[in-house]
Length: 459
Image (cartoon, rainbow, N blue to C red; front, side, top):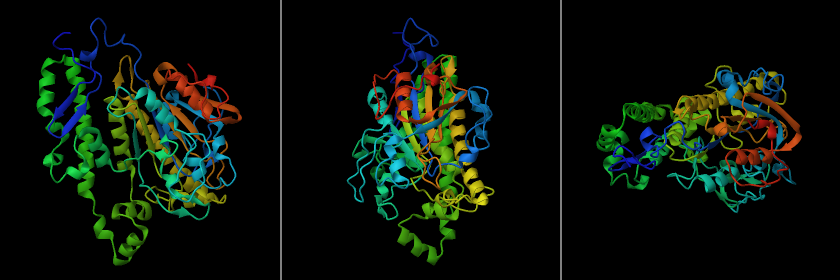
């Protein structure tokens, strides 16, 4: 090995920080070059949106590759050739006696098995979620086998309307049928988990958490830069600047919070009753704009893929039955779950659609971030599979038929994107998981109730 050659597992290290590196030319094995390397690893991510969609404005006109995006999907206009719109898929595992409401259709989105109906903490998802099966096979060579993110904390208690524990609504990722994966919901915690080496409980003892992670690894980074070629130096600099940008935005947001000024004695009592923090109250009840916070989380997911810290992530825009207040959006005056029960009221349907469009816009943002990062002769999005879905078609009827499902990225060349596809009615959603497993070279003969593969999505 030449003195400039470094290991793929090389990290920048300093007191209290450890930063995984993106793939560099200096990591290419001797005798090969950056462009003829073996097949790049394929990443998988699932972004979950609660409460379904306004179905009248979801499905694009015309099928095949010559289609026009619908009004709700218009944020994806510049990514039309990078996505698949999949129609008539259903999660048959969400149909069982007593499976009314949201929980039975959301918590098993990635398992495709019926959940066990309970009002306690004896949860059972029916099976391991697809993302965790990917993590088992693809997470051996990364610092984290998978990472789970979200925007709302775990809900406890019983939803008396349907007789399910609210715990089911807080997870879509299941390490075992009885063990949901815990998700990070704060950008600071998500960022620190990715780049710092301390545990949160140790902050009082370890003052390095007050410093930028890049300052902590600066000496190691400078040593590495001296042995890298010019192209790798530029790539490393771009990567570190992205880290610094995300870290700065998180810090700015923390400094600019002025929630305490908005709290009256009456609201304080309500906070205690609801067991909410001030920030959560403002986000879910007052309608504070969460776009920047959401994008910070998506940028952290981008950094996790870019650095190969993990190849599997999930992100929950909200918990099942989320009633987040979206009045920060022009034209919206209500909350998500409330508006999803529109009762065919035209005004509420339009507000519902605007909320759907906001979620699609965040999905488009994530895809664009991945596409902006070169990798080999393509980009990070080319080597990813990014699913966007809800466990319901229509929130008003709780319909599990013809689920809203999008897939972005070419899966390392295995997916034929730029298509709006209609499958046979009630095609199992599990057929999609089996097909994605095939694209990722995972040996899998079946998944849940799968009946075959979706051959139309293959390149």
